[in-house]
Image (cartoon, rainbow, N blue to C red):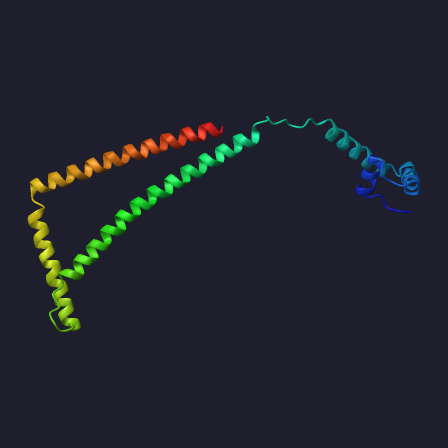
Length: 174
């Protein structure tokens, strides 16, 4: 006698068994109460699945999804451009500072030894500190602070506008 699996019981429910197997399954179901309970459970699930209604989508669903994806790609490109721009400014400033440091060293005609290199480096930093102290008097400090404050306010404005724009875009997706 064969053992009834869920696969065989599902084929029995769907009417996909040949006559010989069908007779064997009926005989087993007549004898085995446990297999009959499994069959009833599978029939219940089968009927539940059969009664489920499919979700319908609108006719312009594909077009709507594609337009949202295109908007999302556009926003990502704008974000990349913004990050690239800011990174370029920082890299440019770093290169200018490094170039100035290298240019400010007075190596003379001969290649300096380690002691001469450290002396030149120390002298350069000392002259920078003296220049910085004379530059950062009270008037210049106020001007620099005002400029930084203005830059921070402008950056905050653009950050807020970008956040607002992103929030509007996300609300369109919902």
